[in-house]
Amino acid sequence: MFVLNVVDGCIPSEKSAGNADDIEEERRLLYVAMTRAKDELSLIVPQRFYSHGQSHSDDHHYALRSRFIPESIVGAFDERTWLPLASSSHSVRRSGGVAVDLTARMRGKWRDIGS
Image (cartoon, rainbow, N blue to C red; front, top):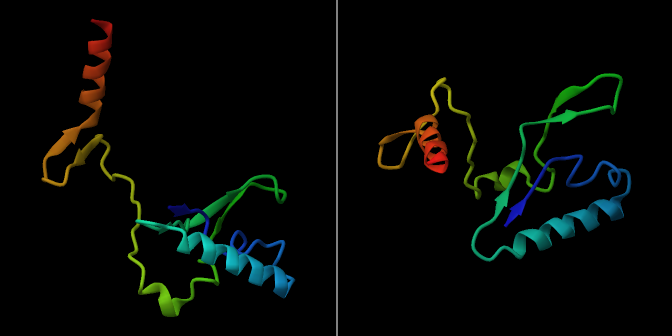
């Protein structure tokens, strides 16, 4: 199960931030989502958001983890970070350590279709 955008402003929504009852309802909703996961739970916390048209300019804003996941329990989670490949080639290392040239493989697939 994936819970997306576990950041303040989304969970809890900035619309409910002024009302304690609404914030508690959103805390309960996150709890329900987290406890419904059967095998795996991923809480997605984006590093930043792109806002379009909300102000006079388009901009990126850094996101803060939801206040419902306090620092005191962060250690209970495995943290994973997605990093794009730094090299210009499109090769990926498989778990066995063998490099796979994705560009060449895709070209081969297109050639197979044309045959």
